[in-house]
Length: 303
Image 1 (spheres, rainbow, N blue to C red):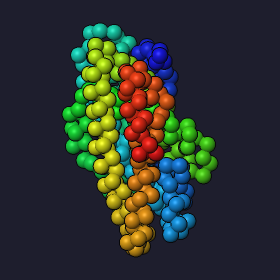
Image 2 (image 1 turned 120 degrees about the horizontal axis):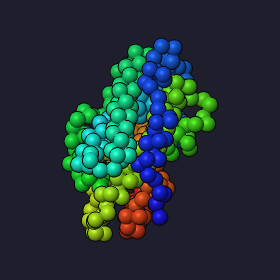
Image 3 (image 1 turned 30 degrees about the vertical axis):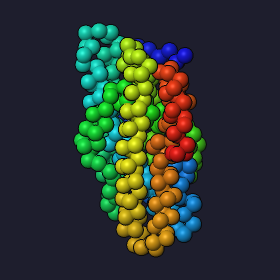
Image 4 (image 1 turned 45 degrees about the vertical axis):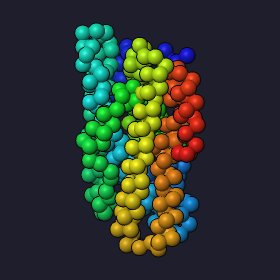
């Protein structure tokens, strides 16, 4: 049985926790480039024994930049998806309409926040760090899938954010306080979005047969495969950014180890942590036990 979320409850919570971009970035609120941005559980720089302590910190910051930029990128598809979902029912449940429009507005705010962050990162880091994209192409590729598959992907992303913050970021006192603040404020709104996504999935699946529900799950996994291919490219970008930022050219064996370790880290960060999140698994179980079983059989490849 799924948790009994309501549009009215999610809207009320969102109105209480609302924050402004100007309150959390800019002015004296600056990134501290002497500290790591990402928890080791996600960055996984320690296995790269051929890097110095400072080089690991630099790679960690490159991963932090990619992390927020990728979230900005995926929210480029979440925003139109939520608006498209809300539009056909503008004259239905008032709380539902207001909650979904609030959801969309907060996603637009997150996109703007991450653009502000990227500019600050580039100004302070001093080296351009490329990130996968462009956003419109990524959004088009994902939105071409079954809406149920897109909704499951969105749920995956939003519960994943919660897992990252609670399990790895919240109590890590070594991380830069400003970067932690950005992750915290993103997380507290995404938790409400995850509740709304659960309700959206219930609505999309309501009149589907088990076979039709499984088709949506299969398309969720196809989107995961698309993301996995993008992560391989991101590892290459991070490798190039690292060499530019440090002025160090890794040997071919070091590059291969870098690729192996960082692809595993990226897969865990963006795929494994979502596919194994209990709330995601509960929703899949609700759709059909076959859905949960299928995802659980695949997820070890990303853990």
